[in-house]
Structures are given as structure tokens and as C-alpha cells.
Length: 210
Image 1 (cartoon, rainbow, N blue to C red):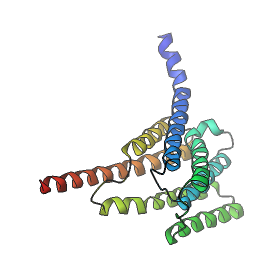
Image 2: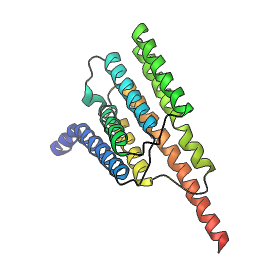
Image 3: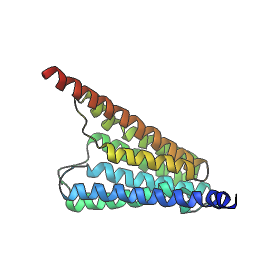
Image 4: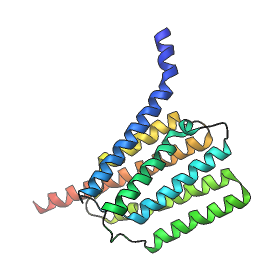
């Protein structure tokens, strides 16, 4: 009975540690793939995500001043991961990945929200608006997978991100931390379903060629 009680008390800290380790693992995998030129992620998109997740973390801490980084470790570790990936892509990635019009729209949206937040100090609205733009930023990947005859994404990476989001949903403290994790879980699950659809389409096409 006492052991079960102690395990229950320690579960949030274990979940926080798992979130941090998994996120760092995804970061290492991405950076290694960039350095070895196995992938060519867009610098603009990672820069956008770095700014956006920093915005959600800052507004979370402002909206809930009694909370700390460990209360939303998912968002806090995302800031580190996105920043590191952005730096690695900038110095070791493909320099041809420039800002396209969609990237500029997303970045402009976040900057406008930041300006609104600085003036209004409405932390809740600013946080939710930034998360809305993060959802929109998934659209190009989703559209590519919908049209593609094969899967171009990694189930390992997106599966890892989905697992992190579920842990964040359990571990996050406060409404905005839960919304951040739920948004990530829904988006990553949606992309994985599209990836599965692309895999099935590719398998069906290969079967017809036999």
C-alpha cells in the first residue's frame, strides 16, 4: 500500500523526465539526420516553431504566475529542442531552404500576436492564438501527405512526438499546459494517420505492378 502511494507521488516526476529524455532523443535524431544530409528540413519552419513555442511558454508563465518550467516541461523542452534544431539547420543544413510565402504568413501572424500581447497583456488569448497558428503550420505537411503516393515522413519521429504529447497531457499543470499537449497530440496523430494512408496507397500501387 505504501509502495503504491510512493509510486503515485513520483509518477509526475517520472513523466517529466520521460518527456525531457524523449524530446532530447527526437532532437538528437533530427540533428544527426540534418548533419548527415539524410533530411532537408526548412530553416524557416523551424525558426517559426522556435518563436511560437517560446511565445506559448512565456504566455503560460504569465497567465499562471504560480507555475514554473517543470509544470509545463513539454512546452519548455520544446523551446530547447526547436532552438537547437534551428541552429543546427542554419549552420549544417541545406541553405536552399528559404522562407516561402506561407512561412512568412505564419511568422507575421505570430509577430502580430506578440505585438497584441505586449499591448493588451492578455496572456490567455495570445497563447491560444499562437497555438492556432501552430496548427495551421502543419497544413503544408498534411497536404503533401494527402497528395503523395508514398510516405515521406518518419513514423519513429512522429510516433515519438505523439508519445511525448500524451505524457505532456498527463503531466502538464494548468489549463494552457493541457491545451498545448492536446493540440500536439491531435496534430501528430492526424499526421500519422495520413502517413499510414500514404503507406497503404504505396503498397496498393506496388501490388498492381506485380
